[in-house]
Length: 259
Length: 331
Ligand SMILES: Cc1cc2nc3c(=O)[nH]c(=O)nc-3n(C[C@H](O)[C@H](O)[C@H](O)COP(=O)(O)OP(=O)(O)OC[C@H]3O[C@@H](n4cnc5c(N)ncnc54)[C@H](O)[C@@H]3O)c2cc1C
Image (cartoon, rainbow over all chains, first blue to last red; front, side, top):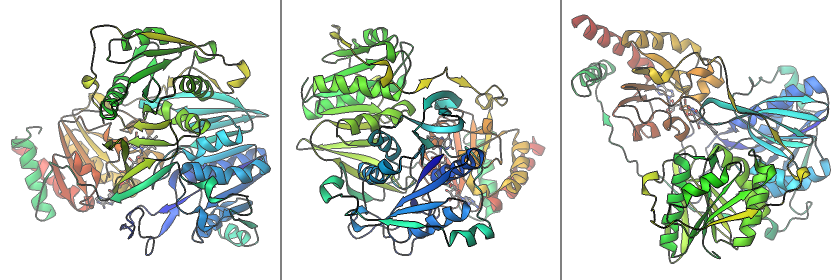
């Protein structure tokens, strides 16, 4: 079974973010990046499926040279090879553009299963996977919490709202967007890190895919990013931890009357 | 209808939930500002029953799509049916609520029609007929304005709670209901859904708790839960958690509060090391009194907190236990 996993790099959770001069993106210098959390779960799921059913795991990532780190990490964890889509034309694509780029390679790779995270922690469009399925002509399911494969048949558990779930079956090949919590992502072993060094990473540019700027022109433009004005009626307590604790208990008893 | 607004209304066995009316309110507001017509569409089993209810709203028409493959929701069935209806009506905008169902099919639908989808929006602005949509970015750290480009139709989904269900405008005369016979060949729907279910071992009912101490990723690991447990004990509170805490297995899933967990409204909700992402907020913002302890003064949890402590939760919890014990001892 061939499984493709789409990985995105996003700023680390506690990174201090500043706006770039254009005010339509963040200043990427001095920011450290990590694999988008649901994508890390998607990778783990792919690795576990490979362990169960055999086959190979191919990691796909779009982005500048920094994404090599995410790719190497994935290879160290056990992915077999990687495709790095690197081109200045690929920066700041919207979900449509990203799905278009990925589809160009996956159309010829024809993986049995494509896994993506359900959304990214930066822009959170939650669309790339679903559009990619449409482009590839694959059936799909989103917000997946469990995967069962029996021959050509796929049965997955989707998360619905408020603690509800639903099983959905579909034929392979298919695309699934993975929800965090589906498994327990592994750490790379020392051996894995050594092996990763000899695993192939192929680089792909827009030209090689026959994609011009027209194919990638966004359907959605970021006009501007800004720090929102926080509407907060919070009463902030001041002082030492001891003082704040005392004030809080007093307020909860005498003001809010909940103690 | 051409160049108007079409609102997709999610129905559940003929029932319309709050989100259905919120979507309609969004469409009506946008239509008023753009000076165009608004219609709505409902699909699936019992769509006609839902359509009857929708006809009381001030809309140009209610479209009902019924077809055998639409009996249960599938992304293929819904995308195909809506594509056909949209191609017939040629709306300029298609409006949704950002529900789990919409997330599942709307990007496919938009892509199949070559349109863009601005998802999970929290507001919009109209200037000279140009619509700018407002979203959150970087987990609420920034706000982001986006524009959809290219020819219509444009697609937009709004976050739950952005529009109020009670702001839906009604009309005394019933709106016309138009039924679409959708032709979907059986093979075109590739996924087969089973009945929705809840995990049987949902052992904790947080909705009944008067007090909740909730922990987030700021707790760092299961070790941190010990002192928090003491705090909960001193208060007589239940322990709850944000999603990552459950994802990591530090606490069981049935302690999760938020859009995919439980929705609670206790007298006191004490949030420790929780950033306050929208998916968490929807599960707890109805609480009477909310206390947030977070080392980041900019954390979105402070948008809903009554009292806030900016600081390290591990420094605050100890003194808090002492103060509560003192209070309880004094009666
Ligand atoms: C479809 C979908 C459904 C979801 N459903 C849910 C849901 O039901 N419930 C839910 O909670 N989430 C849900 N999420 C996830 C949600 O988007 C957030 O990722 C999650 O709520 C973040 O959890 P958190 O606040 O604990 O972690 P983070 O966002 O990482 O925040 C941790 C916070 O702790 C603070 N902190 C760190 N250390 C300390 C310290 N020592 N002292 C004080 N503060 C500290 C940090 O400043 C930060 O604000 C869902 C997401 C999706 C996409």
